Length: 168
Image (cartoon, rainbow, N blue to C red):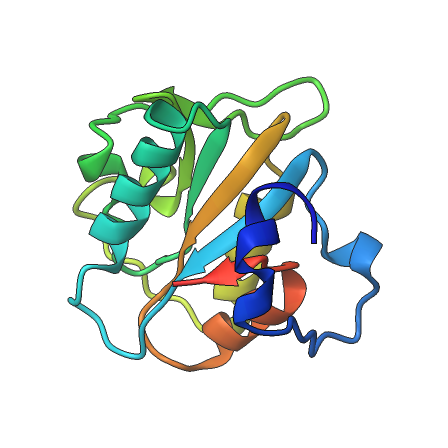
């Protein structure tokens, strides 16, 4: 373990349950990924994720991003006071929107605020794949992932397809 997480290494060993190699799990330019998760909705995951990201960026001076993986109830745009849609660069990657020193990506940027999202599993997984890997994150010390509530396919797949450095 390197860098920021070295003091926490003695708290427990890291295990990987993915069939993908470490190179396939990494997001280009992102050093560490922290997931904020819960088996239940409405417990403050988004609040924790946003406050953690802003504190790491502003108090610790780290380059931080937030991925709002809660496709059905994205709240990061409201919490981060962002009311615009992301642009796309020449490589056809979305450019995250920055506020409070944190780069953000959310389904809430891509759909109208009051529009219902009625998607089945494969559509959700495709959206999460695009929001994590098809975004021009640049160089980040930490990407905080606000996980969707519950313990279903979306949560398991996100945990397996991202090389998590930590989980809150």
